[in-house]
Length: 400
Figure (spheres, rainbow, N blue to C red):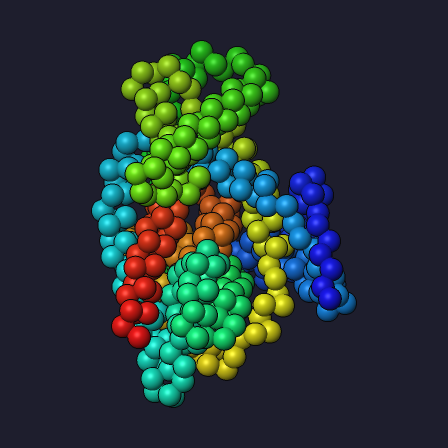
């Protein structure tokens, strides 16, 4: 019988820091990983996941506290929202619409591949669906909801089959997004658009002059307090909206409030942005979130995957790779932001939003900021994608 070893919040955070340092250490020793933009949290997280798997084979498994993981994700997207001004929103709207249309098309294609394979080889349609958009675009969140539904449709072990594919997609997407983004950036000699950064400085010159003499610790404290208030308001927004129907992820609600606060500050001229301090907090929270998420990978879930699922996954992998090089990059603008968005789409299109975020993180850490991608990806890749995906999946189940 499997014995679970529960790590509390402090133990989980401590191990997450170990994961980060371990990932950075391995990257320094293996030049290939650094050169091809493999994220440090992914490297360190996979090592811990493998250790956890060894314990699993011996009858033990570690369970990590997820409280700090959720908190870090909300903090990170709050810092992103505080860096988004109206100009970025206006310029990003068309790209968001185009990306939404692409996501819908990708969801349909993923299910056509899955069901088409089952039809050609006379396999189980429901089993094939677990290797379609349920696990690819949907990830663990959608698999958790749809898995029991598949079992109600008489697919034995349906939830575990879906989870197994989610795990495979999660790992793969976190390893390919960085190299693909790097290739596009180098091939087209792309540079980050620093207009948003210049805009921050231009709009906040007077405020910066007033606060320039403040020590770093004082400015950091102001930013932290602002983030905490915004996070609270974001939770209120999510709760209010849930009464009327739409359910927003906590980090989306916080990001929306942060965007509003940022632009009110721009209009009134009474709220310094403190970009340096925001970047410090954002980088710290994102690193911890990703470290916890990747060390939490349950590798033993891969053991339930069958041959049909593997074959379908190979085709899904080929599909997203081709689309990344020849479609996504082109339709999102063929610039630096487009390259980062392409890497992120490989993440949420084949695995999970965490993969998308890690792919973006490693690229912006090496080549420069991309506020546009961090604005669009969580909205399109999580909020809208999951909604569209669920509608398509239930429609297919109705047809079957």
